Image (cartoon, rainbow, N blue to C red; front, side, top):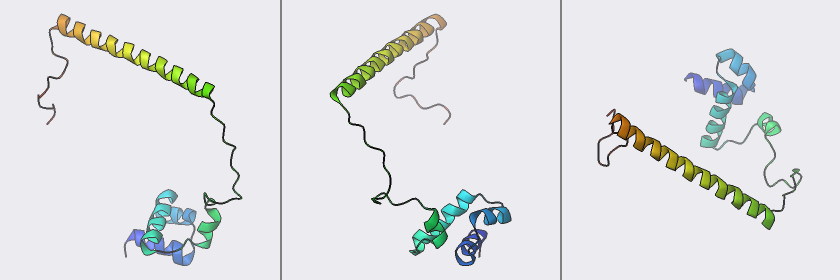
Length: 124
């Protein structure tokens, strides 16, 4: 039995906690938790009592408190559109500036900066 299986068995059969197993084996609690969950899923095992007490309630739970949804108004959508249009305009200006910068650099330094289509990738 490998170490991973041994840790999973200790958790499921002996009821050792994740913190205790972490201290004993020097492996992170999150890693151990994931190992156990995967093992349970593969073997079709139910969650332990300890796991059930720590898991969040299911999404369908009617007793779960939910924040009220904010109603999106037409005015909100118009503001969002205006902000996105402004951002797009800024990005177009930025792209034009970078393109001009590359053109000037290629002319002044007499080097090719842009990759030519069909040329092989560097580093391979």
